[in-house]
Image 1 (spheres, rainbow, N blue to C red):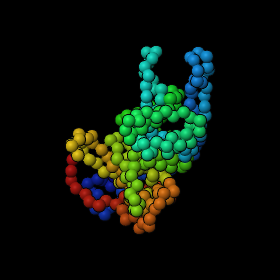
Image 2: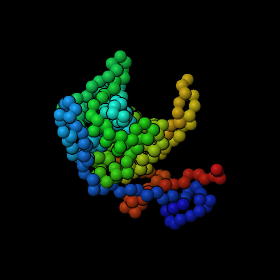
Image 3: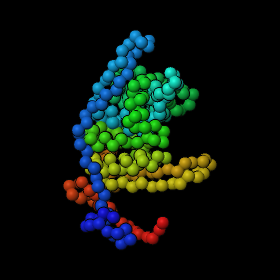
Image 4: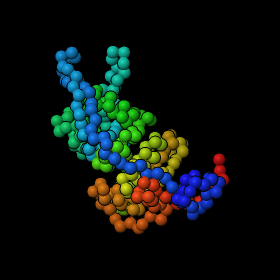
Length: 273
C-alpha cells in the first residue's frame, strides 16, 4: 500500500497512518467534439451534417444531468436498434429550469417535447439521433453509465458543469449547511465524481454503501451514497455559486505534492476477508 512515506505491507497499516491516493490533473487538451447527424426532412433528401461543439460548462451540465436523470429512446428499424432521442425525467417544478440548461448546450431553438403530464413527473425529450448516439458512446446507458476517461482533458469548466448537472439531478444540498449528498445504484459514478471533485481542488469526500433489501416496504437495489461535508462541500458550493458556510480545516485528509496526491488518514484497521 502506498503511504505518505513509502510502500508498506497492508498488514502493517494501523490507525493513525496516512495512505496516499493520486489526484489526476485536469488539463484542457480537448476543447470540442463533433456530432454527425442528418438534417431534418424526408430520408434521402437532406445530407448528413457534422456539428462541432465546445466542451464548456453548459455541455458538462448536460452530461451530468444525463448521468443522473437521463435515458435513451429507441426506435427499431433497418435491422438495427439505435437510439433516436435523449430523455430526462424530472419533477414538474424542475422542468423549466432543466429545459433552459439543456438549451444552453444544444441551442436556444432546440425543440424539447414534454411527456407524462398526468403526474408530477415530466419527461423532457430531445429527438436527435446523432446526439443520442454520441451520448450512448460517451456516457453509456442504464447500468453502464460512466464518466469517460477523457473528461479530465476537457478543462475545469466542463468538469465543473458535469458535477453541477449530476448534483442538480440526483443530489441534495442540505439547507443551512455545507453538506451535499447523492445516491446511485451504479458504484462507478460516486467513485468517479469523488475523484473529479478532488481534481477540481475541493478535497476528499466519502462513499457509503447500503446492501439490497426491503426498505420502506419496497424492494431496493444496492446503492452507494456520495457524501460531501466540511471544507470539501464548502469549496464545491463556492465554485458552483451556491450558499456556503464557514468550515474547519480537514482532519482526515490533506493534499500533498502540489495537489497531485492526497493523504487519507486511517481511522481504524482490522483483519478481515
